Image (cartoon, rainbow, N blue to C red; front, side, top):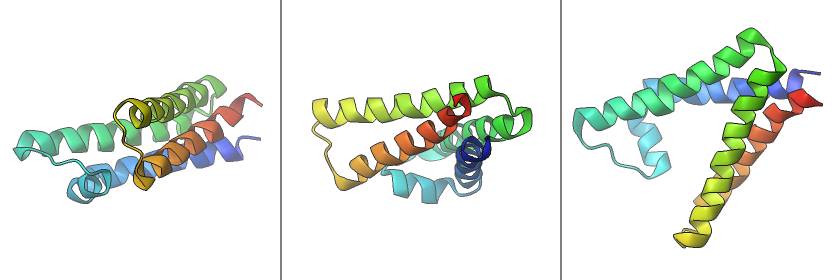
Amino acid sequence: MMLVPNCGAAVTAALGCLGLLFPSAVSRVLGIRPDGPLGMSELRATYGGFFMCLGIGCLVVQSAPAFTIVGAAWCAAAVARLVSAAVDHSRSWQNLAGIGFEAGVGLSMLAAQI
């Protein structure tokens, strides 16, 4: 029953590992440019350590509330990206793919409630 949420958590942790170990590559994929050492540190912290801990935490505790919180956060990111597509006119295929990806990971983690 927890296979689908665990897949979402594993994706979250894997993305965090990529952010921690390869922040320059992640910044290129995301289309953001870190400004100096502080920017690189922010990439490693936010896209690395933060996501890695969220994913690993869910995998370790195996609790539906933990999966729900992280899944809701992924879904909130998808909604925020939808708002951006409308308000900022950022309707690129990359942004639309981001909406689908974030919603997919989020919904997979919310499956812990089923």
